[in-house]
Image 1 (tube, rainbow, N blue to C red):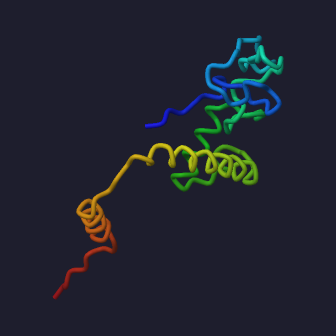
Image 2 (image 1 turned 135 degrees about the vertical axis):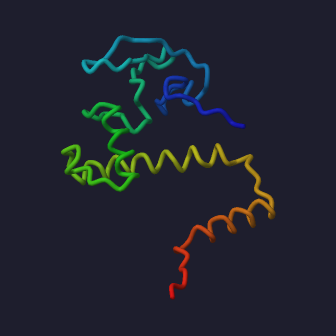
Length: 138
C-alpha cells in the first residue's frame, strides 16, 4: 500500500529543485506566534509550516476545536448553537476536509478488492436494516 507523506517530508515550493521529493533537505526553523512548527528547505531557502497542505493551514481556530465541530456535524448537531461558530465557517472546514478525504480514500482503497459474495452479503445486511418490521395486531 502507498504511504501517506506528511507536509514536512518534502518542499512545497514549485520552483525548488527538490519540489515534492521525499527526503529533501528540510530542517526545523523555529515556530510561528501560534506555536506551529516552521520548516526551511535548504535547497531553495523557503520556509513553510507543519500545517501546510492540511485543513488546519492558516486557521485561527484550534485543531481540536475544528475536529470536534466536524465530529458533531457528522452526528447531525447544530454547530452554530452548540459551539458558536458561523455556519459558513463550518461549511468551509467541511469542504476542505472532504477534499482531503477523497485523496486519502483513493490511497487506502486502492488495493481493497471486494468479491461478489462479500458485496451480496453486505447488500443483504443493509437491505434488512431498512424500514421497521410491521406486525399485525388483532
